[in-house]
Length: 194
Image (cartoon, rainbow, N blue to C red; front, side):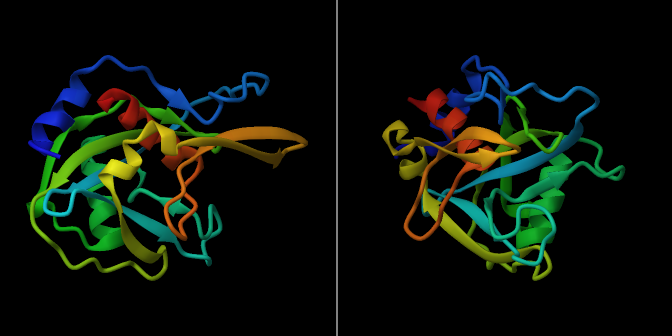
């Protein structure tokens, strides 16, 4: 993929709207009230042209074992959502901020769990040795950017949730079942880049 930085910046320049876990479920009422601000890092390794993802620890109370982008809620010590994404990536996978070139943010994504998640798009300029935080992350792995940018790789699936069928996007890769908010956020980037 020639000139990765230029292509990613081009994707950020396209108009886009916020997304949510409710996109495919118009019959589900979006809960009211304040949403908790959060951010995730879409970290694209420049040398490998891959995106860094995590497998959440099976010991976690929320979303155990799920595939996720590094990230989490904004803490009072985080001046911005970008700061939150970088801090969480440092804590969860040992990503040093010195190798990260933040390009910008995508429109937020609202989750069924009451978070407003801002995806932060960045290039990881140098190789780094990932160090998963054992309490939160069981594995750190890469998925080819080309795989995640191919709209044909995304599928809609569903399961019963709170007494009704809930639909969501998936973008499986090898043994990894990437779905829900992570798949929806990556699909939004794929839409902007196609």
